[in-house]
Image (cartoon, rainbow, N blue to C red; front, side, top):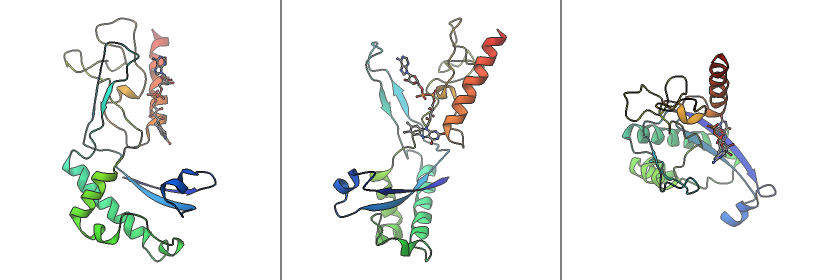
Length: 182
Ligand SMILES: Cc1cc2nc3c(=O)[nH]c(=O)nc-3n(C[C@H](O)[C@H](O)[C@H](O)COP(=O)(O)OP(=O)(O)OC[C@H]3O[C@@H](n4cnc5c(N)ncnc54)[C@H](O)[C@@H]3O)c2cc1C
């Protein structure tokens, strides 16, 4: 799990004034699961490559993800309301104390507010040729097609614990090396 603290000021992000009238600056603590068990799906909507695919992110489908997120929201609440951080803010906008105290309340809050951390991976599964879902082998070479490789986040077998950007770059570097070697 990672927790990110972000701050915003309406001078730099005027949308805040529209979203929450009367608020000029805010900070938030973002609770994130780096290794969710829930998996989403991406399906083609058309054979035309210009048509956007159908993406179902399917967040919190697995109970273990929900349990960890409930725990994370409660830890974030404790931090936000601690004697050190609490006095820095006039108010906690959401969630509220009642919903944090009640497990069902946190679950409902999560279902309404959960989002992803822009780290989708694994839409082009790596695996052996006899796996019907596998697209590439362990070198990024596409099964059944010669001379075509995939070298990006889509071939990660699952989401790494670290954020995905550096890992994607390293996949590119490594596959390029294999291609140079022939
Ligand atoms: C808002 C945001 C914030 C992020 N913040 C972080 C962060 O702080 N740290 C971190 O580690 N990761 C972060 N990530 C995740 C990280 O950026 C991605 O995991 C990583 O960029 C994935 O690399 P990729 O090469 O697989 O795909 P991409 O970087 O998405 O590259 C795909 C490329 O393909 C091109 N392309 C698409 N369609 C076509 C087409 N038809 N023809 C030709 N080219 C095409 C696109 O223009 C793009 O250049 C963030 C992602 C987002 C969206």
